[in-house]
Length: 417
Image (tube, rainbow, N blue to C red; front, top):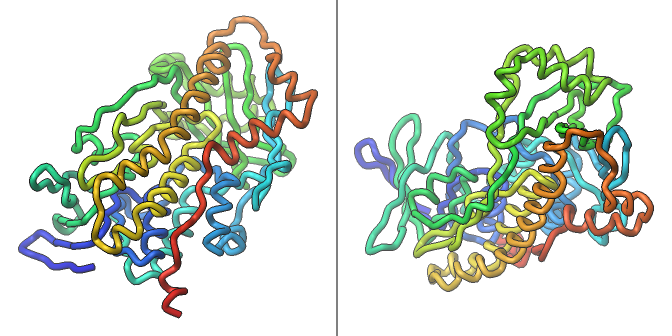
């Protein structure tokens, strides 16, 4: 890995430049550096401390961490372990998924703030001399020569940066600037919902199990975060202006009606700045790559929040990309057929997962938001309540997913030792 400065432009050279320090970017950066690849990760923020990001670490991701020999250290950090998922339908609590029956290393979901997960990945990655993380550095353009992408342009508070690389990886999320610059065609699958995220304090006598609450015209999700609840209020697509028009007092009252034990705490939502809008997208690229560029994670396929599987899909993309690309990158013999291999490996899991998400959006969420009569427990959910064995299926789809990946790359430090 080399670097130099010319005027007010800093220049770096590496084998792989990753735009975006989210779960996909940080996991890929760690795996490539571990395999001896020169890699630079560009993250536009000064730190990872941003709220209302996905907090679920799935059993398949925990398997990856275990295969890296890091699971005990990872689980020593503060977290919650969830063995079952439940939901309220019209006030009736019913079981949905049972992770304790999975044949995985860890038979539970882990809830951990995303910034802790990213900080953990970064702390492991910097142990490798071929890894470099540049914070407060935003990729905002591509370097192109003879129709091939040969690097990125980026901005820092001090100067401009150019990173030349054999491969640029766009892992900068659903609003990826790199993807937009590359002009890769997108298939929009549609999403009938948006989500308002907020935090409300938690008390010792509150329940610990996260649960979705479905009632006529309303869906509310609560995620246990130690001393507070991370709450999501699902609204129809584009409905935020209408919620604000009704006023903050009416919004607080609605939450108190859905979750009565929060009635004396909804006043903590002091203004609209305490409530963050997530504009839900479900889309995917027709082609995830072009010469010199690969998109993974949300940059390749924006996922619905249904099932909280977006992080899991992003991590699986990173593992598959590292398995396929680490050796060619290390030997500087990458070609586009290898990038196509990554897409073909991960496209089927993405399509199937998005199909299931859209099905749930249309058949369950959309109908709930449109309901004007008290909800009855759906037939499928009644079957899940009666038969514990059936709860393995949603547990597998959420916790493991289609075609889970395993680490096939080596450890350069261990090999040298």
